Length: 146
Image (cartoon, rainbow, N blue to C red; front, side, top):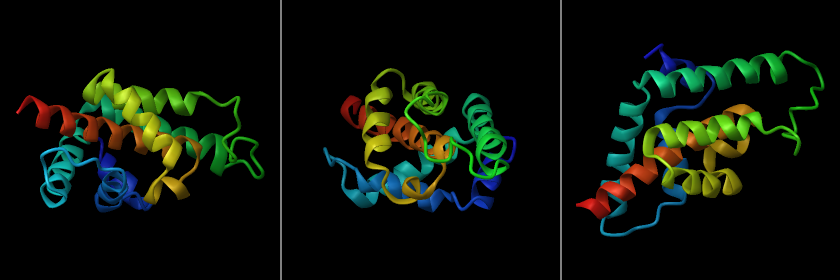
């Protein structure tokens, strides 16, 4: 929806990069890593078509562009402690996908910043972490629910 996958890919945030980051913190529990990788990819693809997830991701892209990339020496580029809008966007994306459990998964990815998350700006790293966290949380829940 809204060409979000293409917009992210233009910034180097490909589905494969998202899967790699997601698998970096994967916790096996009845599903082998190969199966989990495929399932995570499918969940990412599905949720990138959700209009609410898409809108939040576009918001993060626009904020990153406006408040960080267009401003030489932006104080927000270093993700200062007083900037919380980025965290709120990431948590919102995670929760839209998988509810309250996903908020805790978001924290794991936000702190560790595996893969692509470690090189993104303050808004996009949290938005991508929220997307991954929502999908991995859903993956875990679906596995437990059987």
